[in-house]
Length: 148
Image (cartoon, rainbow, N blue to C red; front, side, top):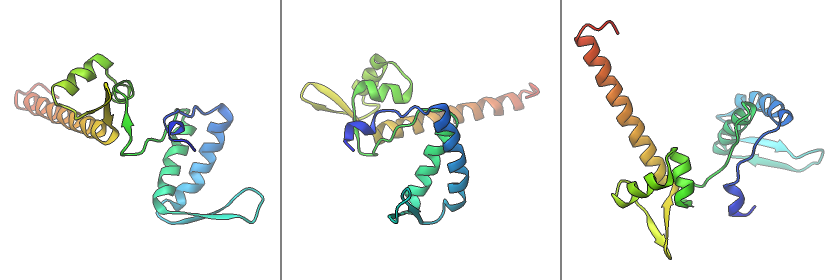
């Protein structure tokens, strides 16, 4: 499989979603184990490590829900457009974040590149900040007796 194929989303058909649902239900019983799987109608058998079983179940659950799925290695380099799509912002907004030093980046020639792990760290940090702000708002509402 080429590395470019890792970034291409797999959009499940209705049949794929049905198969994924059934498969995820069966595989989820083995999520904390290594798993040996027979390939097709052959005597070929492969062993999957626990982490791969966990990922496979996650992929199948998402496919069962009709979600497009893609696999991105943690150390992958993303274009600014790919990074912007991952965090749900416009490319110009992402460029501002990069230039302000909020998310680290490097250049390949004249093009900016962002590591997937840095984008994920930013997403996690923003989510924690939002949750903290919501907790503070709820605390303030309680102290003011607003009935929330």
